[in-house]
Length: 270
Length: 359
Image 1 (cartoon, rainbow over the protein chains, first blue to last red):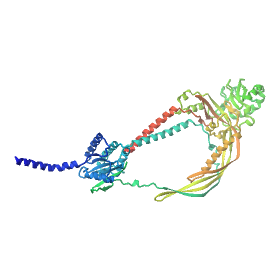
Image 2: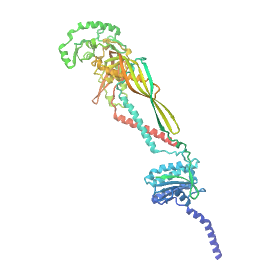
Image 3: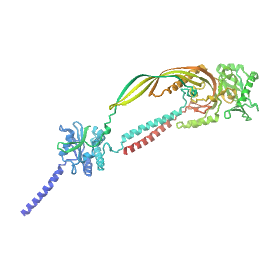
Image 4: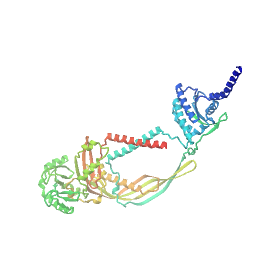
């Protein structure tokens, strides 16, 4: 009886010893949304978490949004990289993932990438995604900005699966409704004004003849004196437009974090 | 006072008039056609007859009174009806018997034109041109529907013709540029030159409207006239049309002729300067030498219509058929067209932009 009980305990311990490290590691992996700065409501958080986790699982690339009030005197880059490393984020063998950090203290943002995240989110790609969130972030519409982030994470990861991630030489094919509307309305007005101008001017064809061209005697033009002489000269100069942007190769710039892991990423102020 | 005169058919005695299609005098009663050359001789014969023929027809009392109001009364040589006209009227139609009549005194002596360009476009051509002119999308529909041409008149309008050589000396400042660049700047060298052109340019028969009744702008709009088709003046050409004698003298018309000749001279001289990126005229001195002024009658079809209290006047060059006249704009139609074009162009541009975004 006692022997059987000891046996049971030992088996249970063995099982625990095998299982616990795994569960402990699982628990170590932080939350998908860490809202220290309290920018989101409970329901918004739940909704975002659901979609982020769905996408993470589908592409095996962790998606994390972290908001903080202060960076603890670290740089946004260091803070984001360390947060990623220390909280065990990342999926798959290469711990792939993307962490989007918002710090309210100085209104800093940083996107830290690791593993597959580095290839899927190039420098150009991160700038592109930020450009789509910029207005919402500036207006403190954080939920809308994070939804945008989620949406683009999905499309960037999907594109990365094809082996050709979005980059400066492989831009996002997306209809820009604002500029489409603006351009079409303006060109429409210009075209209509020109056509109407011509139509209205055709209604009025009574106009004086300023010249007497038709009454010139053909061949009667005799130039008896033609002189040309140089007066003076001036030189103006215009600075050439910098052509550096055209030669941008794209890709992702990487650096090493304090823990020695390679991270990609970009950031700035909002 | 002035005498009224009707060309009578030497064949049947009916009143004959000029036919623009055959360019002859045709009798509407017996269809006989007469060469203008014959008429010229006939004309001369008639001039000898005219003074002795009808002295008793002049109604000195009435015309004298009328003259003070600018109204002149003539009596028709065919039916005796009274024709009211003004002091510049040279040819008209009798309102009673519709026979063409010519007021001889208006076109003799100093008032006799040197040339006339006969009508080549008839009344039907003018009507057709008018209908074609009305085919505009912005014309109010009611204007087209309600449009009653008050009157289509074939008028010989008096013109002063100015000819001569323009002797000009024109100075310009011209610029020629040269560009090169190094690694960071684009340089442009602007070289300025002084350019002078001296020379002469001949003009012949620049017309200026000599009738104050005709708006100068309207008359210039139907130009040009081809003077090579002009013939020596004969009163017979006026039969069947209206005609006025000039009431603006050549002196008063000169500035306009000078202006047009000057502009044309400057344009012609400017075209002789090549190889510069910009040319600015800095001074011009234009003198007219051997200036000649002649007096001619040019054919014009005139029609008037009144719509919404506003008078619209149309004119057609009786020689070339060029038709002019301002038309009212239907604001509603203009807005509809604007919105329609705006909408359709915007949709097309938007579609192109979307395709461009996606591929």
